[in-house]
Length: 259
Ligand SMILES: Nc1ncnc2c1ncn2[C@@H]1O[C@H](COP(=O)(O)OP(=O)(O)OP(=O)(O)O)[C@@H](O)[C@H]1O
Ligand SMILES: [Mg+2]
Image (tube, rainbow, N blue to C red; front, side):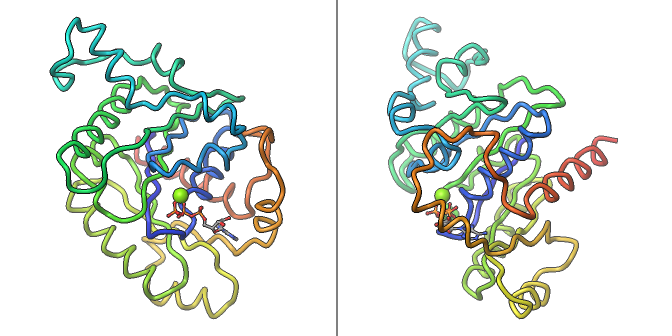
């Protein structure tokens, strides 16, 4: 199952992606957690140390290895690279979680960006997944990364939103775009919800059918952010209240869809 997590800047995409990764891992799934955001923070939130992260080669550099294998530096589009062995060289592993980072790309609009983006999704598309494997992608904020390449192979897009007007509006725009690109299932996730009024705000704007769940604002996250989290076991750390139930729901829905 391939899950992409998107939404406006700062809404909690990385937090949600990391918590989903941990929750799936704790349930015995093998998780590929992919930082598709060039700003790289997913690895740190998962508990990998700065030294480990500094030594991790970005997936983008895989192009060179694949080109070498192919004997020349051209046309990686036409290759159908077998990437499973490469994943080991381009990932950090702890417990059931493998962490990969996409790496820096040129920003928005340039053809190069699209090409590299396509490469990442080609790689992900070539991962041979077992029933118990999950790919979780932490996307960049905004919508320019949403291309047909992104859509390929994404089973579920989770659009995170805060209980604010601006955030919900962005979420709606992302949803429309994702639907236009043919992504099969697109669901909203309300994050950082503190009060009953905020819950009402969300349910007045997003229907129960399109809302995957509500994750309350959590004070402990702030405390943890002040502490040094590096070295905390990636798939054994605390999971945000609400996120495990959500993971169970995603699994139940996915198995229904397969029947
Ligand atoms: N449920 C929550 N309760 C409290 N704080 C939260 C919650 N979810 C996320 N945060 C905090 O909000 C901030 C932004 O979260 P996060 O980095 O996950 O957002 P993001 O959408 O990935 O941001 P960016 O667009 O910069 O990548 C972080 O400080 C994070 O700890
Ligand atoms: Mg982020």
